Length: 138
Image (cartoon, rainbow, N blue to C red; front, side, top):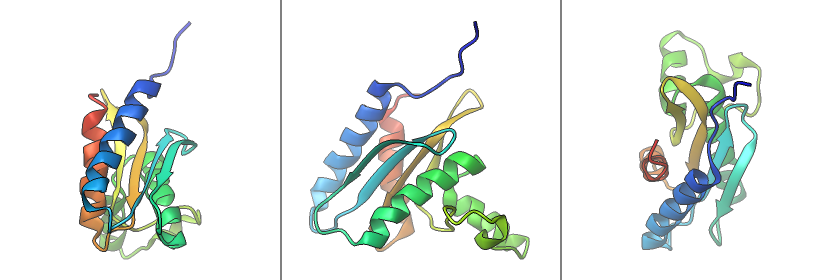
C-alpha cells in the first residue's frame, strides 16, 4: 500500500515553536501563525495576544492559498497581476493576495502551506513563515 507524503507532528511542532520564539523577540508586534495540509485543512494555529481579527484570519488565508495554489502567496498574486487578473477571479473567498504564505514542498510534492499575519509588512510575515519552514528540516 502506497502512502502519500505528509507533514509529521514533529515537523509541525518544530515550525510553530521556531516561529513563536522568533515572534516573541518583538512581542509588541503580535502575529498569528498557521500551518495547513496539502488540501488546505488546518494542522496548527497560534495567535499572540492583542492581535487584530483580520490578521488572525489572514494567516490562515495565506497558508491556504500557498498550499492550494502550490506557490508562495505573494508570488501567486504577482503572477495573477501580471496577467491582468486578481485573486477574486479564482472564485474562492479563502484565497488572498497577501504576501506571507509559503508553500511547503518536499521532492516536488506539496505537503501544505505555512502563513503568518500581523506584521505591517508582508515581507516580515514571509520572513517569519520562512523561520517555520526552515525548522521543518524538509
